[in-house]
Image (cartoon, rainbow, N blue to C red; front, side, top):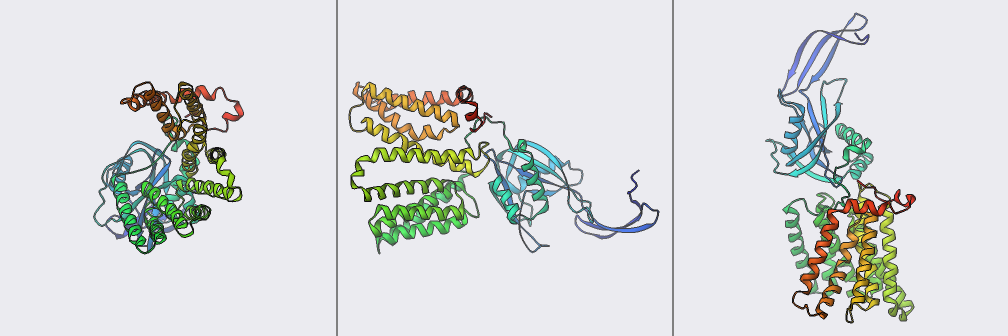
Length: 474
């Protein structure tokens, strides 16, 4: 027997509520004397850390009356009489968030307030999430949203999350990276929509923004695009900053930066001013909303600004356009790799930023090369087509090494064009594009099916020092 144990002598219920009881017990202390202990009896509870495959975590925003304010929490709920903790967790996740999970991991017990309550919360991680329909209890009101796990940890650090159980669960998951890893291999996670509501919101936003642009242009061309940008920012305050909706956030970012750019062109008739202002606008948007595509949009604006500045200083530089674009592509690719190498496990927003930068870098790298070869303004002979294939294979090898399919997708249009033109020259006019698409589509599907062994083959031929800096095989 523990020398510190206190034994109950007698007890009474001071107050009995719907599910909580306030109890007062007389206890025998370790030295033989007696004392009283007042505490709250709780039936027990569970909490769930729902993790998406792309590393995002599902959270709730709920008003807590005793504290008189809203709290950000993980889903949680009390156990019903005779209910196993895991069954409670499954029920609460579905009722509060509308999700079910394919995999459940028990990570421990959290004792809430050991000095005055016997409440214990069983903690679970839920993975393999699938959307169903939420079924909130009567009188229960909450908002569900998701953020990258890294951002949830930032919320703990900066005080946006102060709920004890949520802090404990999030830090537990952070301490054990294997918990948040998924069994899928070499996935380039890219979340675009979580449901039809994302598409619905995008349609509504596009209609509203176009209407404002149209009305504003009746007064002045620059006023319409400025109204477009201003409205996009205001809409982002809700749909991006509060709701964290991916597809609407992308559309609103493009509308904002594009609107600022067009305003600069209309008001100043200057590519230099317009692109400089657009780059500054992208920077402000990033500081406020942290939408991953913003960095790529800002990079595109910087490239345009640098090009315009060079033309202003050296008008003859217009003849160097292909070379300038190629250098810009190398620079953007280098920036993308810097973001990539800072998160090789692909668990944070930095990986999402790298995805969009790679998507921008590919055409900047490929277009000037194909333009120099004359693919777009002359007949495409067999030799040129083979060069195009060789370049694309080189791009595929780089994509395999860095585990980024985005590079290949962004450059795919050039390959389709080159081979369609080649087939037309050999008399396959009506089915030129279809034949090309069939062959390339089959090749890409084959590569996708064998991406893991193909990447393993490529990585084994790289120096060990380089392999250690790239995304690992998963």
